Image 1 (cartoon, rainbow, N blue to C red):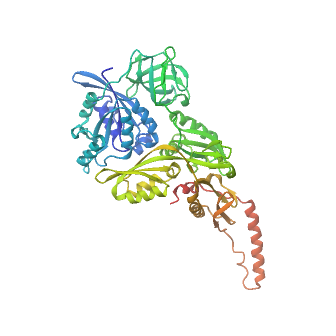
Image 2 (tube, rainbow, N blue to C red):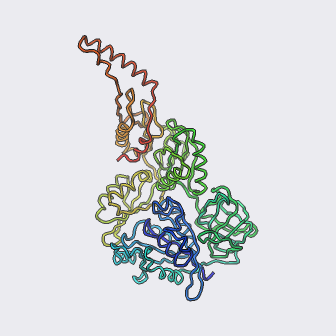
Image 3 (cartoon, rainbow, N blue to C red):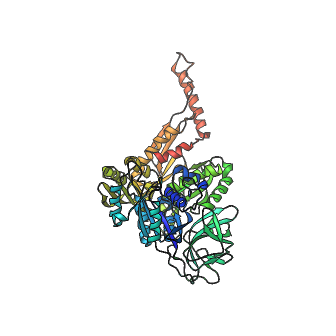
Length: 595
């Protein structure tokens, strides 16, 4: 056990952690030269194209240091804020962390939030300055930022480059010297922390875990504490580039277990595995159910694809247990599913994967968050969909989720960013200078305000220099109203939204104007109205496409023209009663990009 080192890599998106991981694998000869490719741990096409890590990965390396062989377990983590719970469990499975900072960009928001998580778990932090080979790297300035943040000595920071391989041996030596060996009792009852799971179509769900106490053998009868389900360990082993089976896995090691589990809901990240015969007295602390924060409706474009969509979502859920869905129906779009996502990036990735892996084209409704609605009798219900709101006369008040957001930016853009946050009903908590011209601004904001376009606007205001991170705080009472969009007096439920009372009139007016541009003209007039309850707050009319019926009247009495126009008017009126208005997919997306 004294020769095992478990560590993870903490970095903001695109600070080069997957590339540095490639070099570590190459220098420890874990991956043969013929198998080597860029971002070897990112095995999804999507991850490679976008240059982000979506799933965490684990891999075991062997390294000789002063004549002794050490086992290094690297747990690669996603950098994006949507996957922060997954990151927290990966951090809990480690004793040390490489803090990687890009020498050309400096410290950014997610680096700080993941760093605090690592410090809370008492991890040994090894600061690494990456990408020092870039022509515009600023090693001196960024080192100052790291020293200020960590309080470490300047000489402790390792300068490295994932591209050229500079400093990689220093990193490996420092991991062996500084990261403590795992603590645990080999004779205690078995406790394993699950930090990830993957689905294999032939073998079921494979759970990745770290043995905290005890040891696990092939063929043992084990129990998952939170679900209270029991299984046989058909195969246990360690994670090289592929899985390599072992007879037994000991305390402190990282491995996998295959036990023929068919549904992803039975394996939860953060759960504890123990023996049935000699169970552990308690689970490992820190487990929580992953709760979706953003909800949106997914509807098939052709209504007969409903069952195919269900099958696709079920298969996706096997690979990604944090996706939740339940059937719902909409008057405008037919049958579909209400899906819960961890955040906007998660939603985008699911949509992309549905399209690529299952060839499913879907219509997505406006994303919203979950609200707590209290009625006059004091009952509380959770609402994920504006159409699920009870009658306004029954509602006492509505609570909405708030987040604590931290934005790190250059001082040049403070004014514009503050204006943006205040426009989104943000409450300024604090503002502090990290170093020379970098400032961290902390706001409390409603989650509902940031799920649509906040991130895009922040990036465009700051020319890409601001970084943003958030975590959920609590629910607070808010003056929210349901805004309905009516076409010819008929409500389109897929376009209805919950919005704050103060913004509702301008929002309704902008929606009507936008829909007027996007809905094609028909043979009859179309009235587009925005309404709160029975009160109409905005209206636009799309004029009918009409034939000039008076063209054949040249001269003559005016009554002849009037007669023809009256006849046409009657026809248009009849048409309006039986005509329906098709709302194109562009209109649903336009609501997201109103500005």
